Length: 268
Image 1 (spheres, rainbow, N blue to C red):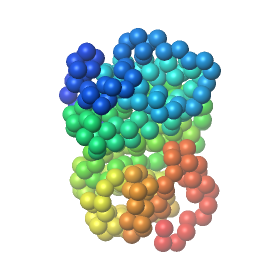
Image 2 (cartoon, rainbow, N blue to C red; image 1 turned 30 degrees about the vertical axis):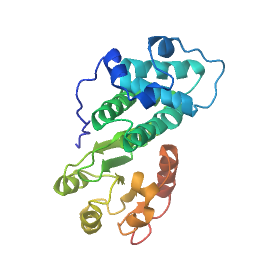
Image 3 (spheres, rainbow, N blue to C red; image 1 turned 60 degrees about the vertical axis):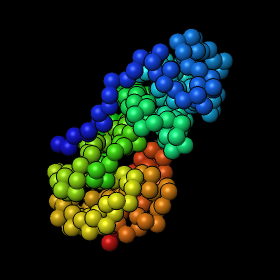
Image 4 (cartoon, helix red, strand yellow; image 1 turned 90 degrees about the horizontal axis):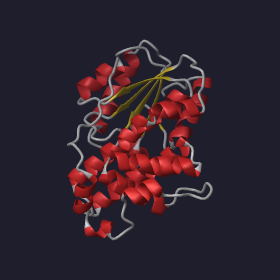
């Protein structure tokens, strides 16, 4: 059974220490402290806007408890965890990436904040799966990153949506092409999804995937690729022996359900 590897990160600093480390450009925005996070009141459900996403990002920089309190506040507002995942956590991850790319955060702080964001998915997993539980239909899915990927939060979130729809999900973060091949061949899968973030291993995967597909026990396995590259540069993925899916998590789940109901096209 493949295992999901969660990135290791240093122990997070205290909220007070982290607040001092925040760049001035971020600290000039709405500061996140115990009063703001724990005492935020909401009047009726509304879409999570940029201001609230920034609050979550700043809370993740302060610590995991602060980040949890923001999510609790959103739940009191009436947001479902699906709303929070798609409208809160997903854009927050992008925002942290933007802050890093614009040098508003250094690598260490981005890593810590991202780790806190990913931990939220683990913390709320059981509750999320019980929001709209589906009976298991017995179909199995392997979700894995490209070899040597540094980030896997998006794949973890996608796995939660598939689990909630009754899929048996195995998560893998292969460190190299050899492990990538081993995971692919580890057991019978009805479908395999690969998240691609960079173009570093596209040539290797374009060579390896046809060989893997030819050697699997289930010749009807559905293979698809997604992730950041599917949105940013889908043309670069057309050389892979897989369908390119550039949708959000619910859209990907719905797409695969439809594909499982259709005859497998030759050459796909």
